[in-house]
Each structure stands twice: as structure tokens, then as C-alpha cells.
Length: 190
Image (cartoon, rainbow, N blue to C red; front, side, top):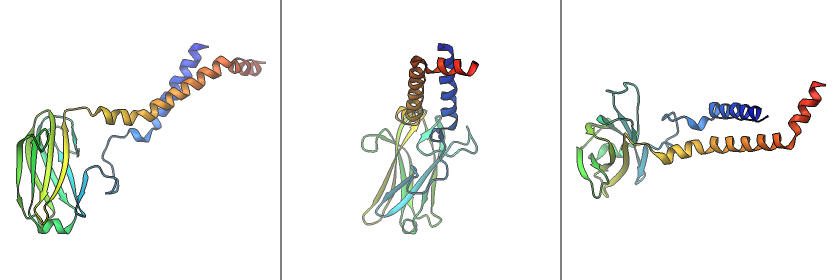
């Protein structure tokens, strides 16, 4: 009886995990409003992409980088207004207020709408500040996590399936304890 309950719970857990769409970790095709790589200030938006081709030629990251090493930062100036003012990038180890600058792309005009550069990032937390030198200056902040696990994101991703599995386990336990399974199996065998 207990074995059957465990098997049913295991099958239900596998079913929930296999069909849980929220478990996808990729960047995906989301709208700009939902994209966590987009920042907005003063009515203008920028999009950050990070690449580490030495580890994966095709993968694009945003703020969670899987490994330390050379990292290509690409900021897309989504609004035309930003292309008509100098834009620069600074990367700080730790926070932008207290951290040490480890990489910098000097402010310049980018009529093509792309600001890019390379920096070597070690394991840890970094702040990226994109500054558009308009009046007033516009600052866009990103926090990069290099070779770090975001436990909050992992917990949020698996909270739903975990709760469903617990609920299914509890329901199965209650069903087995009620004796309905025995009576159901007994009536079928007759």
C-alpha cells in the first residue's frame, strides 16, 4: 500500500516537473516590458546582453553569468534619443557607490545604437552603470552575478512545482488512509 502511494506520488511529481513551463531558465522572446535585461530612465530604454563565447558560442546572458573570464557587454540603445547623446559604461566590482571600477567604455556617440566592450570578470558580484550624458544625465543600473547561484530565483522557480507535489502527496496519503483505494480495488477485482 505504501509502495503504491510512493509510486503514484513519484509519477505525479515527474508529470508536474515535466510540464511546468516556469522552469525554463532561458531569456526567451518576451516583450520589452517583461524583459529583465531592459532598464528605463527618463522615458528611454536600454537593453543589456552579455556573452562569453569562450564557454558557449551561442548563449546570450543578461545578469547571471555562468563562469568567470572574458565577458562581452553589449548595450542596445532602444530609443533614438539616446543615439544622439554620449553614452558610456562603467563596471564596478561590488556596488557602484563603493566598488572599484574594473572596466570602462568612455562616453561617445553611438548612431548605430550599440555600445559594446570586453572586460575580464572574476567570480563575484558586479554593478554595471550605463550613463547617457543628456540633460539631466540618465543612469541605468544592472547587477551582474558571475559564477554565483541566485538562490532566490531558484526558490521562486521551484516553489510552484514543490507545492503542487506536496499537495498531491498529501492528497494521495489521505486517499490511501481513507480506505477508498482498497474498496475501489476490491470492487474492480470482483
